[in-house]
Image (tube, rainbow, N blue to C red):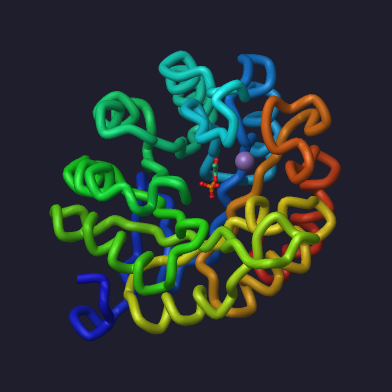
Length: 264
Ligand code: PEP
Ligand code: MN
């Protein structure tokens, strides 16, 4: 179902007027790694909304390497993320990690994110496939392109055609970046499927200084959008403080990409 052999024309999502894929201009999904507080979310959403960003991200359920790391605000985070987004006419995307949470996350989020660590969680894929919300499907840490596309197939096979593929870097022997951004996967996914494909530069790089060149490269190979983490104070963030952009950093990021994004 994901294949171009079945459907040759690009799938263009229209989520409350926000178009993604096909002939739509590339979109930016931005926001903090984790939803941490009302103040943090209000500040970030104010900044991004003023920049014309239409999709706000923020994790309420966090897949942390250590069980002792910040695990997210849960339902309180969902409520907060939804409110700050709606107040500014933005869409809200957040990760769902557990089949038992799909219903509540779908109540508050406009887009359900399946994270890299859950790309192989077939029960979760089926469950989001039954939800009436678009799904942002991250590529697994060590997933082949074929496995990633089959994961999308699980979602479509349950009747949900609104899937956005997201390349976010894969594990390699390289240590100077957190992951290795696989741009051939972006070009291949665009070629083999009709789905929108975006690139998460933040988790691919794991370091701020590479975000601009990686985003340019992603757009050059045809990505339909860029996912980037933005936080009012990355140094004190409760997760991913090496790679989130502060507001001045986002200004530079946007300025460098403006000609490729056609930012309004
Ligand atoms: C995230 O986007 O919040 C996240 C945890 O990313 P990934 O699943 O790609 O690691
Ligand atoms: Mn993060």
